[in-house]
Image 1 (cartoon, rainbow, N blue to C red):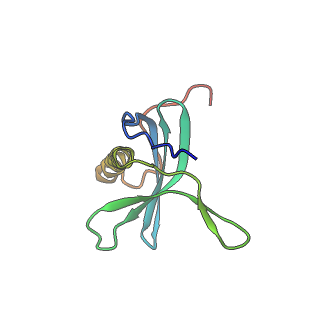
Image 2: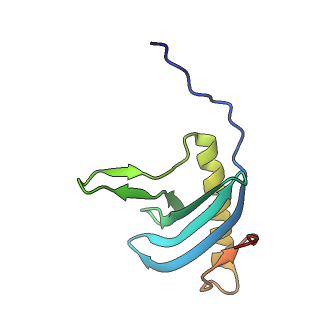
Amino acid sequence: MMIKKCRTDWPAPQLSEIEIYPVKPNRGLVAFASCVVNGQFYFGNIGIHTCPDGSSYRLVYPAKLLPNGKQIQCFHPITRQAGETVEAEILAKFEALSASDNPGRYLAKTSRRSGG
């Protein structure tokens, strides 16, 4: 059996329609985010959590809990470059919303979807 190497030269993902939904802080969770990647895939329910030391934020991708107690990942970046790009863009939108004149606002869209 031949083992195929994973491709490592993927271009950075292009994010659009980044939406931030602040929530009442609970156990480190401060907001949810969603975005469209490369104009082709919608990703939602991305948790924005404070880091344990409180110095910054981190993203937590959704997982499904099966009846047998096993947890499986719904989606997540598979390359460091993709993870860093998604994190930087989502957290930039979150921090801009947090620093705005209206930090209690519950929706920050970067663009509007048509036909929705």
